[in-house]
Length: 229
Image (cartoon, rainbow, N blue to C red; front, side, top):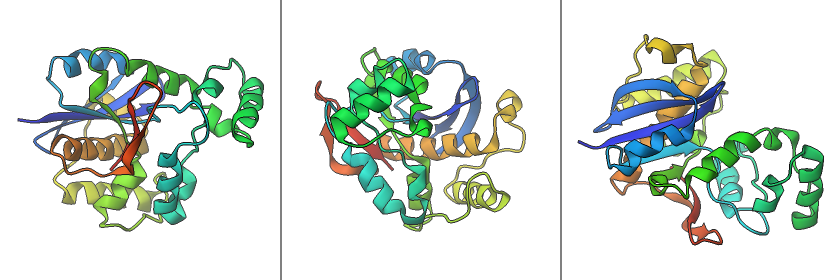
């Protein structure tokens, strides 16, 4: 049996969806991503797919984000360009904005800076036991793959968008129950994103996933920098 997790940042922490042999096996909210590492390190979970940038470059923009935006077309606005590592070490948005301009010649949006806390948390996990089982995903790329290469036009917070995404997951064998217990208090788009991440985690575990770029870039420590789908 192959067990994988998909994790999406949500209010108060992370929402996770577990798949066993590609089928839904549970959903739960956790306060830290680090809490998932022990089971990953022990081999209890083959892959943890995380909807958060993993792997930062020293200079320039990541090819992963540029290629993901190009592939998504009308949904390209869901992709944030991730600036170099030094930008995320700054304490304030103003300082990060200044450093970003120094290193890339372009500014940093406040929306991107809003990821800072979760991005730092996720990247800190990469150096811990079990961190090698973490892979970066982008749910809209996963849904595009589920839709056989067609980017979804309906936004994920809309009724049409959520029903379309839930149907695509169900067609792939991931049937999300109406009652998720405590996890059901999480916003529905976070549940759907975590499930899509888990679908990609299953593909990664079986060697069927693709990466942007392919092959991946690498950070200063030799870790791959790519978005998987």
